[in-house]
Image 1 (cartoon, rainbow, N blue to C red):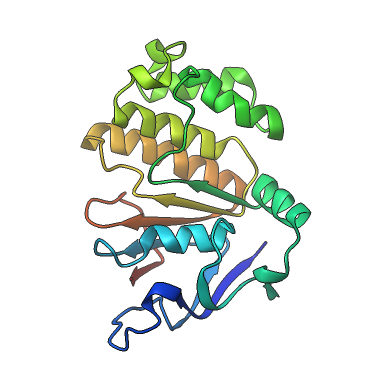
Image 2 (image 1 turned 60 degrees about the vertical axis):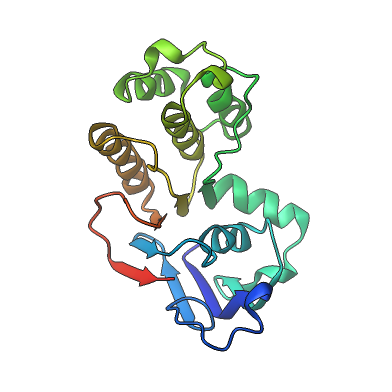
Amino acid sequence: MDIIRLEHTFPEVFARQDDLHSEVWRQDVTFEKGRYYLVEAGSGTGKSSLCSFIYGYRNDYQGMISFDGKNIRNLTPNDWVQIRRTHLSLMWQELRLFPELTALENVLIKNRLTGHKQKKDIRRWFEELGIADKLDTPLAQMSFGQQQRVAMMRALVQPFDFLFVDEPISHLDDGNTQLLTDIMVEEAARQGAAIVVTSIGKHMDLKYNKVIKL
């Protein structure tokens, strides 16, 4: 996948709002593979909705979203399985991890589907992110910041052309933010992928090709 395009797209809940001041909603926006984007947003402006629309999790929007010119409303369930397995990855703001599983199990459960990384590489990420001692800890017993690092690793254990990360560092200090950023950028660069970061304030320090105000 090379291009994601939004054409006059906006959430249905905004349909009666004529005073939208956005560089995304009701605009023509293109995300290109290999480029880095920052989507800056205020609370309640639809940041997480944007990610959910593109990921196919929600369809309560007007306008059109297309992948390489194909309207995503025409994609079949099998199409979505393939796209989410090999082209599109998302780190949810609310993480959506399994609290009853250990940190390592939360990453491996996806890697078993994709076969993308060796277990030793995943363990190395845990070490680099300073949570190697949490490998066998149930996720429910970890802080939200530690869980964010696990969620990022899970997002990275697959092939992707576009990586969307929704508020990925809201609970991380500057040191851990940099460690997480380095791992994310290294993996995206290895795959020639685009990164789309959303933020309502603190954001990853990347060389963004474009900053968009939601």
